[in-house]
Image 1 (tube, rainbow, N blue to C red):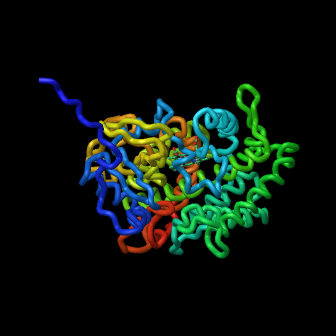
Image 2 (image 1 turned 90 degrees about the horizontal axis):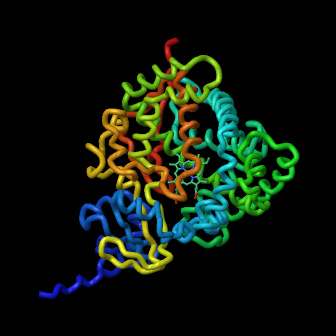
Image 3 (image 1 turned 180 degrees about the vertical axis):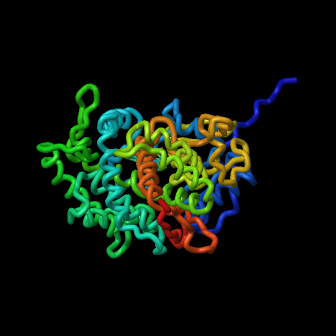
Length: 446
Ligand code: HEM
């Protein structure tokens, strides 16, 4: 008997959670993106869609889908189009470029991440961290998230811009930077006067003017900060950036680096205050570091720190959803998805899936240890830094920053919760604890 070929499924056949009139799933996504996606995946399976700001966004679900979307061997998915929320404030950033153009710019940026300059950033990070930590006092409860956000921004002035920590420009630029980032997720997308977007656009103008002024200074006397290294950056064929590209890349880099690291460090601080056995393990390895500046061997010896950082990123990834837009029709598991559809890769749900992780809800850093290696169950089972052509270029820098911070902090203090109240985590605009995570530092007995 002849077999009738199965009718290909279309976008219309993809299931979705019940829609709220007018807003669709927009408010659910803003309130709890992972909850929305986990719930939809449990009900409908890996392929489903949600409607955000009037547009359908298709989620393809599991780790194979992450590999398909982020690995993008067929050049199907535009990152520029996917990250449309950043177009106004961060034009020209590396993540907002596609395919050959992206590759050409990434090759140039790679020069600012070479080993010798990473060593120089490490030294700057260590000095700035030690200095800034002197403002943190023992026995006085404070909110960790705003404090670490402030510290990473001030460190940005030193390590990214090469300014002294007390340079008056540092505060001006930090404030402008906060306004610019706040605007990226504001609901009103046009710079209507007195809105977050209008303030964000004004802040962008302040930042870009200041960065443009710094270019000739740094060309004349380059330092070992990110900005100088980006002024000098060239690929192996000698291609470099003009002033406009340079300013746009730097502006984007600052955004990509700060809130992500502050969010991850907050989850790490929560973990240490909650699981004192893990804090003890990290303190032992910090105590075993030789005196003097931390070097590669010292960083590599911080293995429990590595496990806790990985687990923190799994449980609360700073970037749980990665948006793309299809540039051509494509097929996924029998569905024909038309060009122009927004597609979400979702490392946040993959990293909580029992398909790859035992008891995914549990804080259990040993799952990454040599005996278990749960992150090896699939190339994309653990993907807080994304993957493929746009994989986070700052992942080693972020790991270095986290280790340097913890080594400096735990050399002197233990960290404890300052309140017994349960902690609620919000995901938007960047994952963070409601209430800021009240903690207290206690001086360690020496
Ligand atoms: C824990 C901290 C961090 C996390 C979780 C994180 C996460 C990510 C993710 C998921 C992407 C890929 C986005 C996509 O594919 O659309 C990305 C890209 C990027 N990240 Fe990070 N990031 C972190 C820290 C940093 C730092 C410290 C820097 C700079 C020093 C940085 C610079 C960048 C840049 C420039 C891109 C764009 C890369 C490209 O498009 O080629 N990130 N990051």
